[in-house]
Length: 80
Image 1 (spheres, rainbow, N blue to C red):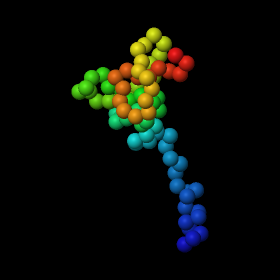
Image 2: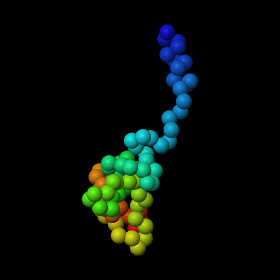
Image 3: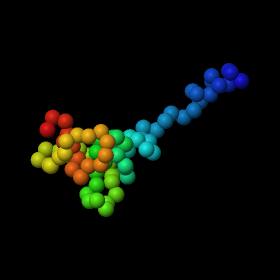
Image 4: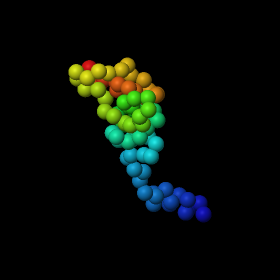
């Protein structure tokens, strides 16, 4: 039994790069910014669903960075 348990982990499939709760791509539904690859969970209004969005680019309005919560304006890309 112990030998079977030692051999089982290499036989399991590798985890996907994208998860169901974290590491979400742009456009996917989210509840907080830590779930998104971009670090921005964005909603356009108080009644809209929040979705992962890219960080604000040059000449776009942006918010101060926060690890949690939902943004109405995404934080700026690094260096801006």
